[in-house]
Amino acid sequence: MKHEDALKNSKGFEGLKGNEAKAKFSKSYKSLPSRPDYDGIVEIDEGIAWAKSHPNVKDNPKASDALYINSATINFGSLSVDNIGLSEGEKGNVNLLNFVNYTSSASRYSTYALGNTQIQLLNAETGAVKLFSDVYDWDFHNYPLSRRLTGQLPESKRDRLIFGERMLKGLDDSHGFPIFMYGVGTINTK
Amino acid sequence: MKKVLIVAFILSFFCSCVFIRTDDSIDLGNKYRFIQDHPKTIIFHATPDYEGTGKEIVPPNVSAYKFDEHYIIAKSIDLEDKKCKYWIVDKEAKGALVEPMDSITFYQKLKELNIHLAF
Image 1 (cartoon, chains in turn green, cyan):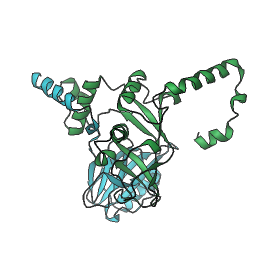
Image 2 (cartoon, chains in turn orange, cyan):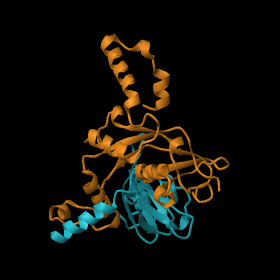
Image 3 (tube, chains in turn green, orange):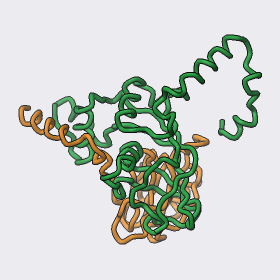
Image 4 (spheres, one colour):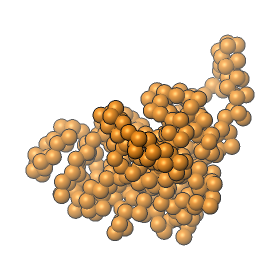
């Protein structure tokens, strides 16, 4: 169901049937400030901790397994209207690593979380962009089981870096979760 | 094995960083690229060399693709409606948008255009 449809059909708190439903709602609502995405930003350690506390959710996640990131908090580094390669209204893909500002923690968190991500340039004058749902994970792209079982490292540079990160942070195939983007981000205009 | 462990240790020491998002997109020729990372998509970049951005030609999620010097064929599962869609990209089109088609139309087009590619 699209978010807009859910809002249209919402009956509000009064529509909850029974005390159990209301209790579940209250419990969920009270837990919000303790979520790592409560401030709209997900730091690297927070993302890793969330993945470890929510294993095996990539294929069948509940809404509460996802993290919700405010696009307005994303630091796009040196990405700009001039270099994004999109006209207003166009959708595309950007690898934030190409634009990261290594001296900015916000830029590093954003790049780590999103990496390659789908993006749409909403307004070329203001730099407004829309981001789309993504997956926060440490997946291999080309590391077949036959290689893993024989103790060989992955062949590609990217997969070797993922291998190293997994070792360093204690991550594996069970770790990864969806991220839902909301709001509007802003890139540089020049 | 010892060498693998040493290399793995060194890699792990340096990897706690954004470099894990290093690009590994596949060059399909004529400035088209397949993004292996989620969301898997096929893009076209206007710059002479790929610089980390591109316009979406086949939207995510691309589940299969093949290419030769003239064409790219792709199959995708739409992220919203979950429908399977088929695409034929003429690499001479310089990033012009492509319309998806159903499987029947797709296989008819492959014959019409004499495209010898298969998933």
